[in-house]
Amino acid sequence: MLKDNVTFLKKKYPRLYEELATIETDNLHSNITIEHTKDNHKTIKVKKDEKDLYVHSKYAPLREAEAIINKIEERDSIDENSHVIFYGLGLGYHIDVFTQRYPSTSFSIYEPSVEIFRHFLDNVNFNKSAFNNIANIQFEFDTTAIDVFLGKILNKTNKKIVIVDLPIYENVFNEQYNTFLSRFKELINSKRGNLHTNYVFQKRWIINCMKNIKEILTTPNIVTERIGSYKGKTAILVAAGPSLNEEIENLRYIKNNGLAYIFSVGSAINTLIINNIYPHAACTIDPSVKNQEVLEIIKQKDISEIPMIFGSSVGYETLENYPGKKYHMITSQDSIATYYLRNYDNSAINVIYDAPTVAAATLQLLYVLGFDKIILVGQNLGYRDKKRYSEGITYSSIELTDDELEKGIWVKDVYGNEILTNNSFNMMRSQIESYIKHFSNLNVINTTKGGARIEGTEFIELEEIIKRCLNEKVVEEDGLNSLEKNKTDYDKEYLLTQSRNMDKSYENALKINKEYRDILNKIEKAINNRNYTQAQNLYVKLDKELKKIENNDFYKTFILPMNRVQYKILADGIESFNEEKNPHEQGNKIIKSFSNFIDICINDIEMIEPIYNEMKGSISIYAESSLTKGV
Image (cartoon, rainbow, N blue to C red; front, side, top):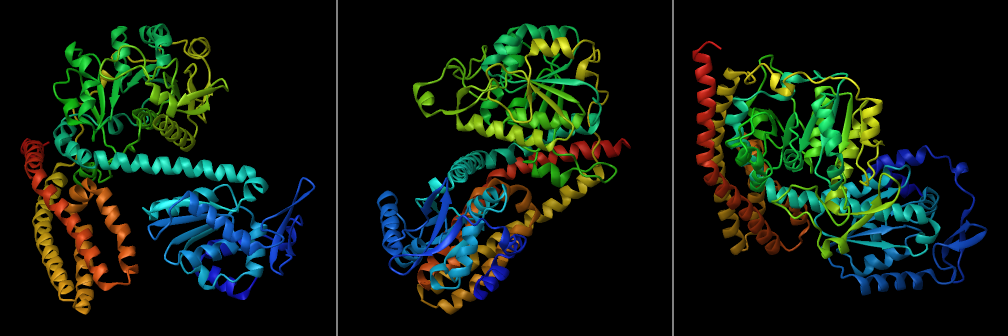
């Protein structure tokens, strides 16, 4: 290995250097070797299936590198707002060509072969100017390398990503290459989905939590009151997939004989009720206004026997006029509860992590409650007979459109066949799989006929499960309604103290806003006067004001979570501001980005002021009345 490369890796990529140090050179495959080309350069020869394959042309690797970049230019437009991922490093000829044409475009390198990576380090210097704009380097030392590499890039950049592969790699490293592209697509879709979800619901989550504080203070916390209480018992998690229609009589038999606790999630409650089956609880976490329609059937029929378990960030309209008992669980989106609430023993409140599907959140809840076995019903996570939902749902289309069918993706079902699904269902499946993998000693059985295969579960039809396992009554007479407490007793003195502290933070936030605005005005004046030295000094002050925002409790609890997307864009953009060489352009970019951000924050502070005062009133009534009574 070249000495400069040793220094480079130790300084900038110490983990890579450590991994390389554990790989003995003698153990590297002899089927990958260096050869000289006809024009006196070097190439890499790979022997595969008794054939000699060359990573670069054995005649003219530089000319070939030009052709590779020309082809990419025909396919994609590349500029300084792009980030290029080179899949395959080889000896870097194509990267040399690329950096000559695009000296301002950042790039990363992923090399699936440690042997080829070693040959590069032995022959090419990473310190040459071609690698000035490199953002990340990774070689594939284990199965986690792809996710680590792509995760760093996708979390750090909002630029358009272009993948450039050495053409021969698709042949030489076919399986690794396809895995890389597959994971890239999955992570991109996940990032887009998360970004969309955050953008759509970021304000709604916080407003819901503020509105719901009254319900949280006057209902039991199901986790606090019943954690671990259901050891040795079985829960059935019922979703609204098309296969639910076939399990109605099996569920009726289970409910009538008390053989397991039945939890409906999302829209499944409608199918169950029209079939006169009342689950032991209806679970809901959706923050949208539309979520109230999901449980509207219970309100219309005035059904008081079905308890609702709601996430604290659920759409507040869902809770209004609900006729049955209500239990809450604090979700990870709830920064309000995290700040204000504490148990009397000073312990933090247990949190259920928010998820793209209520089924995944409920799976967590059931695990925390102690259920040893969880049976999934109607969890299709895919299409069946051109249907997305079970019968009885009137507020959303059950039938698929031709466009949805055309854009569908294929996955394996429980029988090993291919079924059609979409990105949203696929993300839900991945989330459920990750939770199952995380929960030790939890037996999850998937009974969904024709549903997508869920890793970590065993597929057994529900009829068979009843015969094998569900042969005695386990449900208490009143189900979940037997919970003794009418509410969970949170630490009231702490609640009042936090409320008073938040008022101070609110006043301080208003002062920060004024100082932040004053600095921006001074920066704008300095830029217009081309006084760039003064502007640079003001940037330091602006950065300090941003840090004050980040450390202010009112901002941390309410405003930053309401603007998490814009805040991330601002934070990610700071690095690009520093890279801007033109001081006038730099100043204008800073003014625009920081001004847009503070304007949104100020508007939100004004918008939530009446909700904040309403929330304070609920806290005061709960805490002070209880303290007066000596509770």
